[in-house]
Length: 199
Ligand SMILES: C[S@@+](CC[C@H](N)C(=O)[O-])C[C@H]1O[C@@H](n2cnc3c(N)ncnc32)[C@H](O)[C@@H]1O
Image: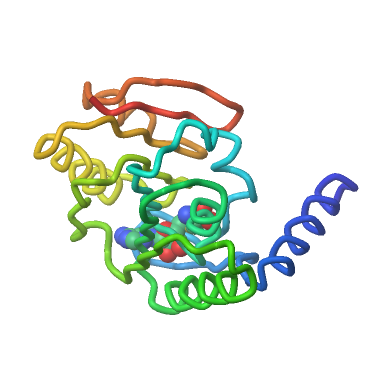
């Protein structure tokens, strides 16, 4: 391990300690999407903050993390922004339960983290994106048909209720697929992250 990665790991554990959460670690999830290798690993802390300034979010905005894992970015969303509510959808029951515990522990320790959080244990393929969601976060959670189902649900929601939707996509492996829909415009590119606007 290099000195920089050791420092990062220490800082990451320090934030878990500060929030009273456990979001670190890697969990292999063999076979949940056939041949596509999927695993749980949290986004680096501040992945959302790097891509989206709190000044660009209002109290009408609603946040959604597709494949929210142990809830690290839901926590970042509820603690750093004025979102009306923050939603996380997670397939794996054990990981979902971690997320519930993490948000509960963080809100208990830090009374200022008061925003409304909704965690849902569901397969994204059957999840209808609510028509008030306006910021979507994805840390390369799934690929192929599962990703397509999630994006189709997002587009369907936009068609039912046209509004500005921003997608913060970390490690955007399905970039081509997104652009091929003709609905997503690249708003901003950062190292390892692309922010799209759906229209
Ligand atoms: C790379 S982790 C990202 C975790 C979190 N978004 C973050 O940034 O810290 C991807 C998560 O997506 C979840 N996932 C995979 N397939 C899913 C599906 N079909 N529906 C909902 N969640 C899924 C996995 O269980 C895993 O926890």
